Length: 108
Image (cartoon, rainbow, N blue to C red; front, top):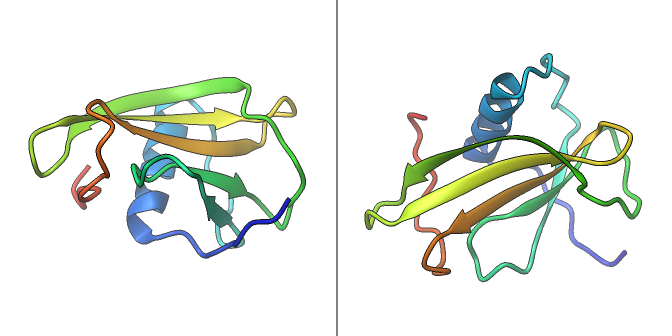
């Protein structure tokens, strides 16, 4: 897999933690989490790589989701998925008009 890994933004971590809690997952150590931006029209979806795991994985298990409005008032649906072994693997962000995400709110 050719991809650039980066440290997640604080707002991405906030989303992941909120979705983990909503899905009943216990808090895990995200200090080694790396993310890779997905080609989603700049809506903000990322692949998640926990504890250095960087191999091809499928996001197959839905964990939880919630919705917020972007700064322009357009709804954004955010979902968290895990791979078949239960490791979180994808943060999916979908703005309903398919436009780029303006901003993840700080006060979710």
